[in-house]
Length: 141
Image 1: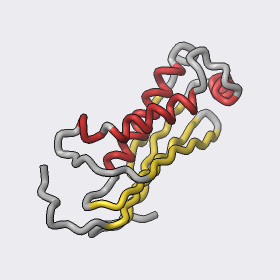
Image 2 (image 1 turned 30 degrees about the horizontal axis):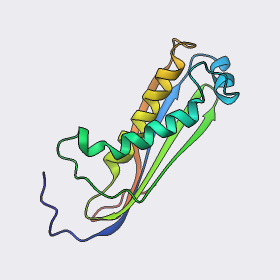
Image 3 (image 1 turned 180 degrees about the horizontal axis):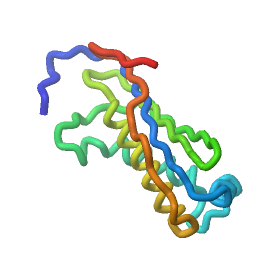
Image 4 (image 1 turned 30 degrees about the vertical axis):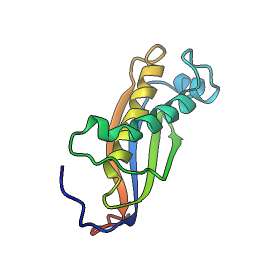
């Protein structure tokens, strides 16, 4: 792992996204009405995302364990597309971009898993960092 012992703690934020595209408006309706056979897709996927972002250092060998002091997961539906946005904040020596992107990917995968019995056309797109602040470099929008 990279030596971060000489770095200063700063307030760090990362916002990442994943896009889940479904195959029909019936799938969107089932999500909104909470009638998907496997349960409430947004609630279950949010829980999975929180678990995923917390476990990031257990899965990625060069990722430092760090205190996650805030995590938020939001959804936006536009047509057949669901945009997942994951925000992670900490006050630490290293950033939370990987945690945010990992959380977004786990949310998207959980949505896929829950929806696959009712929709065979699900696709996951654009897992990416939208914004990060803190440390030496800021990537804003």
